[in-house]
Length: 110
Length: 116
Image 1 (cartoon, rainbow over the protein chains, first blue to last red):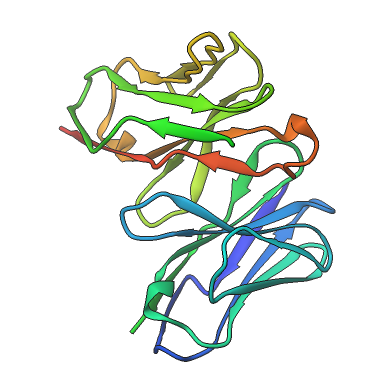
Image 2 (spheres, chains in turn cyan, brown):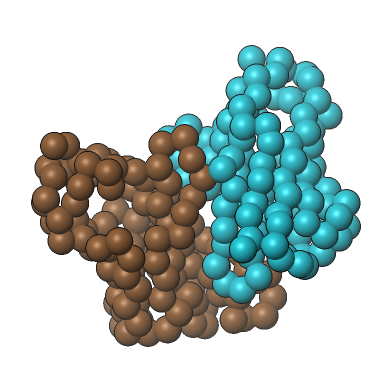
């Protein structure tokens, strides 16, 4: 069966520090991968998606970037965090129309 | 473009009450429709789905029917439990269109709280 992992589960970082969040998927090959952010009390915002290794599409201009160095690995990064980057970050994968989500990373920028 | 509109929350109910969370959508083509549930501090879980008009998705006592004529996919449950307290998201995917790469369009979410 397929599983999706995210780490770390929680993270507290100062403004201006770098960020690296990792997402890995097991039990499937060539999935579509997605990064979402969920700000407190709000809905989901799609940040990036990827249909293959090295292929990244950005949905919104921002302080973040994404990379897909391996088929089942998706990384979300920032060189300098802003206060507004705080939120709950969710990774998801799909092979057909439905998506399956990871447990999320709670990021607090102080 | 695609959009999903959910009823304003939060929704507060007593245990065993009837639940309806309204969801309407705008999309080109023939989207698939989903309800996801998010329990506190967790990621989203797929609750149910429907892929074509008049399909009924169901799971854990929840149901939703794909109504093309009213562009709606309302979530219902006959008797809610305290454990149903969560945030519910309606979403659509138009991956059948070929270029959307399986992207989902989500509603804003509805917070449900069920009291004993």
